[in-house]
Length: 123
Image (cartoon, rainbow, N blue to C red; front, side, top):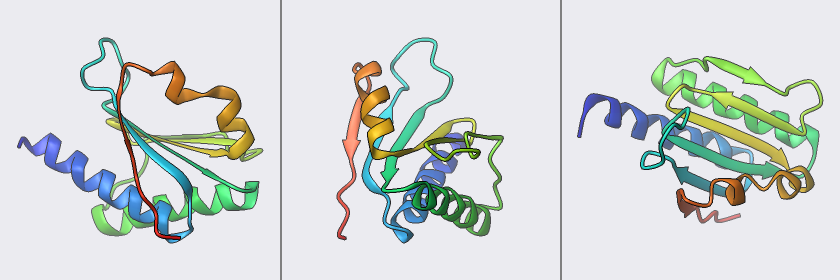
């Protein structure tokens, strides 16, 4: 496993931990590595029930990643209305949606060629 892959795995682990700490729902990882011309290696997608929870998920992810890996996102977008917030960690991009917005944009459908892993949550 390369240094980049190891770092990416650790990042994904911490992102998932951050999502789980505030009970993000319907967590899914899309592996984009075998698709040509993608902007990153992985999408992590989840949703919250309100803009308050969406913001809480984003804050939890950033705090968890920062604490464990001393890593900050390269870019965060969508915080204004918190319907869809994107956290860009370069190789991994996290999409945090409100449920109805996620259904509307159907990222999983758009990236149907990607390998997909649904993460089982215990809450």
